[in-house]
Image (cartoon, rainbow, N blue to C red):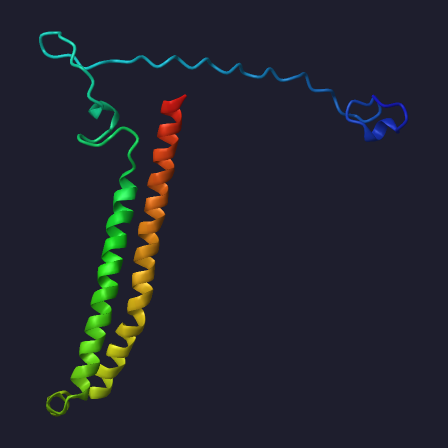
Length: 154
């Protein structure tokens, strides 16, 4: 109790009318059991060597490989291909609109011109995004390779 202040404003003061609560016992945290490594056993009781598949590593994958890197690589290639196709398809639509024979058969040549120009405009951005994705994956792979080589050297 701090005697500088009026006991009415203190929790354990004599004049406050509050009873002092006994301290609550804190439950002790239980010790976590140590993990036990269990290797697979055949029906005859023989131990089977662990090939990493029990821990979720897919067969044929290197330890520590990231499946999302493969998705990024495929995405980068798809974006590059979509950019190239977009540029050429847009050019075809613009050229088709300008031909005299196709203008007679097409219902709305203005739509062809608009779609063609939109595809031509979108193509370089898709190309840049695809190349940027592949460059990012390349730098990521280089960083992992450097880390592995540095650990191997020490």
